[in-house]
Image (cartoon, rainbow, N blue to C red; front, side, top):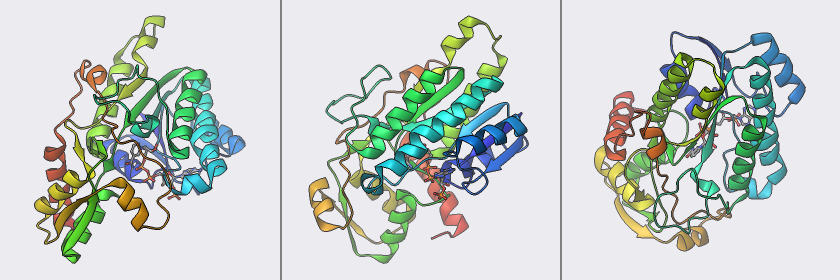
Length: 298
Ligand SMILES: NC(=O)c1ccc[n+]([C@@H]2O[C@H](COP(=O)([O-])OP(=O)(O)OC[C@H]3O[C@@H](n4cnc5c(N)ncnc54)[C@H](OP(=O)(O)O)[C@@H]3O)[C@@H](O)[C@H]2O)c1
């Protein structure tokens, strides 16, 4: 398959390069293809004619987005729409990623695809508008809502806590926000399964029902505090991990301006009904930390 990966240097973009190794990959980082440049996107996609577009490009700086709402919107809404439209013209499969931060966190059971988003932050709002832009464009699309991503690539919570756990004696971590940590490789293999299913489907009006919005997270929920405790334990760190409220955390640091949902677990029953697996978060975290330890990437 000919697959275009946008945002190819981000943590999910790099994961897909491993998961789809052996395919004809077109790797586009921001320099190669700025997704917010509609003319460039049109020319680029028309010239390359990918059968699948994996959109891993996004404005992901949750706090900074509060100061730069226009830039965040240009990338997370306009950029996404540019790609979705080009995918539709070619009848290519378009895969886009969204976030648990589209919810306000007022529920106390996991959010389904049917729940109404009500984002608290600029980042969450732009990601929700991006989802809507894809759905309005139509075509053969998948939107995967996911949460708390980590991997051996890029910057993420697991790598930060592993490092701090070795350097510091004590770490204070937010204990009143609950969600589902998710290993990018589990997400990426699920996307591979979704694409395999859809390629195998005869292209009838009925097969359109198969496309659409899916939640995908690892199984089980925890707070950032519980997540950090597990990371320090599995990586052999020395730091004592202590709980702190989100309010205390924001008050103790510069630049923590975005409001985050207190509860943002995703219900993944819809994707599991297709036979797609959601391994327990502790199991996937163990795998990732083993890789990080063997790479000595700390
Ligand atoms: N990380 C999480 O915890 C999390 C949770 C839920 C959902 N998601 C979603 O999952 C997806 C992947 O996230 P990630 O963690 O892999 O993010 P990431 O590591 O921040 O990667 C995003 C990539 O997009 C690139 N990019 C930014 N603006 C661009 C533009 N205008 N044109 C082309 N590329 C651009 C960035 O390049 P530069 O580095 O040059 O800016 C970066 O390489 C995103 O849609 C995100 O919203 C992430």
